[in-house]
Image 1 (cartoon, one colour):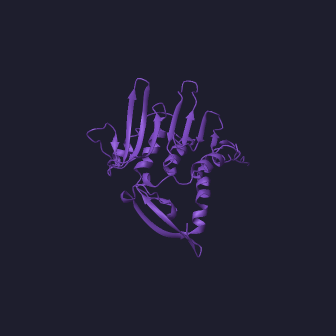
Image 2: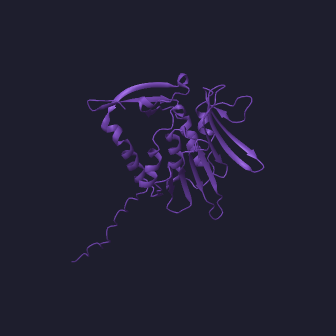
Image 3: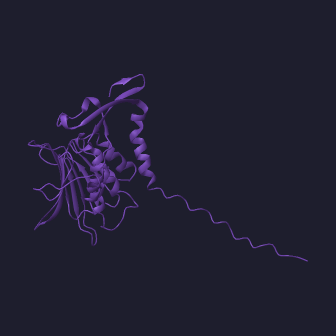
Length: 254
């Protein structure tokens, strides 16, 4: 970002699903510092692996041009089935973070009553004649629930008309519904996301809205710290209020 007298130029991009990948640390740093996920480091391999404290969930970032860069796997546990979510490299980190934030939320609902389509319907996404899912008003993003003999899955895909796929996410149907709903809620969010002006994606430039602004450099530098602090607070249980000791009323004397 270009800096001038303590400020930097920042680009705001909408819709957010066209903003490009962004900084992976927006996802990985809070997982490690706020949620306690451990990480393995192999200096000879260009990948990141984070594991949840209970060892049941693993996030893997593997920069392979032929496969999804982001993979989140949860192992089978008691009567709960295993599940997997994958995201391509150009998936905005804000959308992946919506998934991981919901995953690590200690107050998240245990049930499966959430409807992943609900946030999209509220944002006026519609069903085209040739598909069964919902498509964004600009026709670029698609969310579809697919079923097969091998199981069901959720497909999220962005592409311009007659153009290649920009990014794709696949989430198995056994994934808790509130996690999928967190992703669709982020997709439907019309709030622009911030990017470095020099790294605005070249794809679909004519389909996105880009505005620039100058903001204090300190605010940009501390954005991730503020995010970590906010997510850490979810795991901090405030101490119970002390119960005052019972003092019997004074006895009356004559």
